[in-house]
Amino acid sequence: MADNTTPARHAGMIAATPFTEAERAAVYRAIYERRDMRHFAGGTVAEEVLLRLLRAAHHAPSVGFMQPWRFIRVKSRALREGIHALVEEERVRTAQALGEREQDFMKLKVQGVLDAAEVLVVAMPPGREAHIFGRRTLPEMDIASTACAIENLWLAVRAEGLGMGWVSIFEPQALAALLRMPAGAHPLGVLCLGPVEAYYAEPMLQQEKWACRAPLQDMLMDDVWTEEPPAA
Image (tube, rainbow, N blue to C red; front, side, top):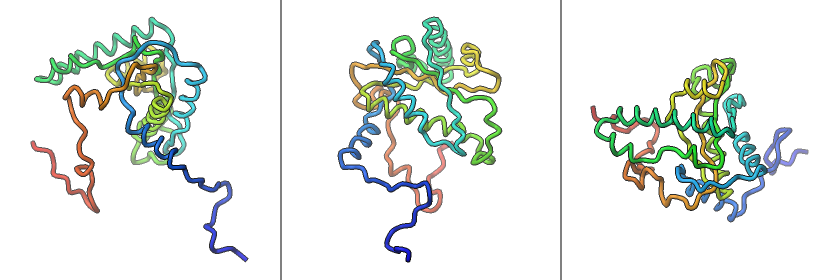
């Protein structure tokens, strides 16, 4: 006779062991104290720590279990300098596109490629179009899945007492060519990672008065879209 007081479980499932209060607090602490770092203290990241971090990234969810992330560890100083130059070129173009905020933007530190202990380039491989499970109407889910891996890495980095910055100011084709990526590969981010002297008390762009976090209430709606369209 079946025990109807016990929830049914499918084969291959395991019991959900609750987190302790301390474990829950640690997860939320990593989320709230994560920062997009631009200032690094040099030093090194132990190989076993780096491997732990990459395993955390690799355990991210992905649509259709396509796992569209690839990581290139940039160890060559010459390649780092090449990436730094690409970011600087795009920094100038972005500043010019910002019009009246050009000078304010040029004062911001937007990368730590030459300062961080480690530089990882995250890219998506060619052949992603073959994965249609969950992507037939939303092909951009390969990008969303890769972003999940980056976020996993970011939170693990914070838990390890390190810092990480996601640099996206570069021309993708130029970076792909520099790193000899095959046709169809698409770089999504340059991740600067390593020891930091301190963490920003709040997001750097908020500290610099560039932008501020919007109230959560402004992002919530019930049933249907109720947010007013932006002013023309």
